[in-house]
Image (cartoon, rainbow, N blue to C red; front, top):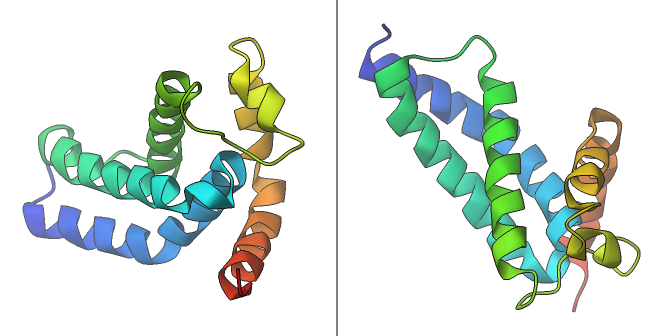
Length: 130
């Protein structure tokens, strides 16, 4: 089982290289107005990695583990808060409100081919004066 130093080093590396992608994808799903929620989900996911990997060890594909845990946390959050918070953009909002289309829509929006677009969208949102 890897030591605490190796786990912390791995999580630090993943934070630097994967957190931006995760926030970009989640911001697309949550909508720019819920950027803080996306950041909170990513932070919670990284904390979960530190805690669980100390017990279970680092998984074979830690990046995939992070994305799956972030996805599950985001889906749970949407299910709990869908009546209180508007998620997504105008085109995805109705799909994220329905229990039948929520997970399918989430999976489609989180596909690898869209991540670069989401990162670019995130840069524009951060640079926008509003």
